[in-house]
Length: 123
Image 1 (cartoon, rainbow, N blue to C red):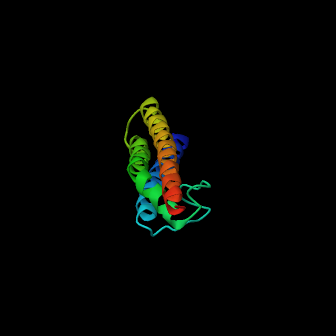
Image 2: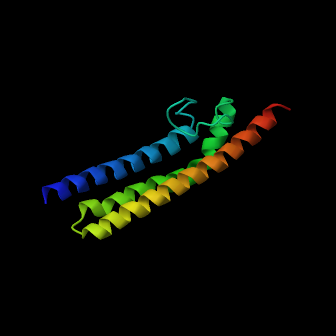
């Protein structure tokens, strides 16, 4: 029993924490508070090429990154509820899959937006 409580606490903290972090990154990068860096955000050659490309990428990716954050937060909620192991494990798995899919989608559309912003500044 104590092992399950520890597992639930770790899962809830990691899922909800990563979700909150994604929500913060989505807003900070899209608003220009999170500048180009090698640690957080969409870090591709296109997005790191200029401040304009970085901002365009994160503004375009903001909706899907927000949804990814909420998937992670919601995926961690059942871990703190008195539900059976298969239910909270399944919710965590769905939350992770949703988060990963939406982050990858956001990176793809963000990188495309960065390339468009970069090609516009070369003219």
